[in-house]
Figure (cartoon, one colour):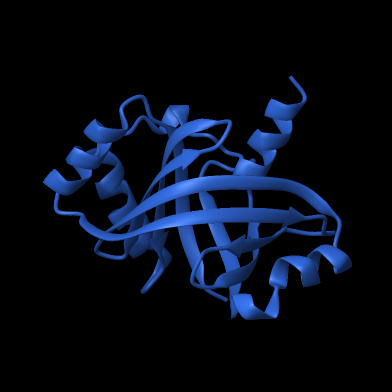
Length: 170
């Protein structure tokens, strides 16, 4: 099962954060429009990510209570012509829907996401993919946290699903 190390942080200045990422050598990878539909499940998180060109059915486990956010995940690509939203919404109970624009940059084996999330604001996410050892991934992750001057103490240890649910209850 693939694994990555993650960090999510709210950002105040999208353009400044994007510029800083480019200054350290991150390369623009993609601009995505995404709709994530989270489903009720007995363990982990289960979501359908709908994008214009295809969809992805994603299951992941992540310890939100620990210091580091290691995530194990499985991903299944789906052709949109198969109408995955209609299919999965008939099988599973929908918990939350998250709509976002995501700019993806790559630095080595780390995806840098700059997200504009409808109803929540702007965020930066790092996802360092484990390609060797966990220690190597942690080293590369820590390098980027320092290079981008991120304050790990202000990280958000929740999924967008949790933030949307909290926001709806206010």
